Image: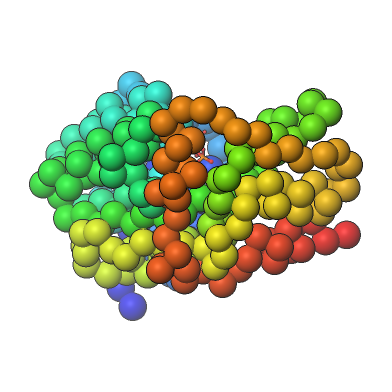
Amino acid sequence: MTTTRVLVTGGTGRLGRVLVPMLLGAGHRVRVLTRREREPAPPEWAVGDLRTGAGLPGAVAGTDVIIHLATTNGRADVPTTGRLIEAARAAVAPHLVYVSIVGIDGAALGYYRTKLACEHLVEHSGLPWTILRTTQFHDLITAMCDVQRMLPVTVMPAGVAFQPIDVTEVADQLVTIAGRPAAHRVPDLGGPEVRDGAELARDYLRAIGRRRPVWSVPVPGKAVRDYRAGIHLAPDRAVGRITFDDFLARRYAR
Ligand SMILES: NC(=O)c1ccc[n+]([C@@H]2O[C@H](COP(=O)([O-])OP(=O)(O)OC[C@H]3O[C@@H](n4cnc5c(N)ncnc54)[C@H](OP(=O)(O)O)[C@@H]3O)[C@@H](O)[C@H]2O)c1
């Protein structure tokens, strides 16, 4: 196998932390863009900032593939993605891989509109590109509960289901994509089960031993209406195998 030199932006995030060791295990040379100095060790760290452009020319230099996971949670994703593309175009035109979200076309949620705008930048970048859309990660459900940990109840939007997927399965697909030529939009990746949000929250709280009621609360607004309509679900692409309960059992087994 020829060694591919891969730059991962967001390699320290939820998905990136799992992806980077898998890429190394597959024999790739991996560099991770991060804003903070880290201990020197594989992967190679490139200190830089997508908001300012600092460190980007060095980070992209000599790479065959860039897997772009970094996100500012929507606040600056369009300019930061644009800046990465500019740096990549000035280098050797690597294959740009972008991870996006199922159901973002025509969605009202600001973050989804931003992801769609980033997809357009990637598609028109002039670089070889691949876009993989996935459903929500299991960790997003636990994060939705954790932000409410100081409250006496956990609230979930009524009538909203999720189809969460394990980051290891997304990472596995990205390792495959990194070893192949650019493929444009590849089939969406969905988790194995579509389940009510409040039910998922109850399972999580039980798994971590946090005792409190979960309330399904009607939430107004176009963004939540989209979620109730299930735009973020891909039941025909339920290809993930690790269920939310499997994920909880692995992570919180005593
Ligand atoms: N979470 C989900 O449910 C979900 C579902 C589908 C798709 N996605 C997509 O998957 C991707 C990864 O999501 P995630 O949840 O793993 O992300 P995350 O945990 O929020 O991590 C964000 C990453 O972005 C990097 N970053 C932020 N600002 C930066 C800047 N100015 N310059 C350089 N790096 C910067 C951070 O690196 P440092 O702090 O080291 O600088 C960090 O590694 C995102 O594109 C997201 O939209 C997520």
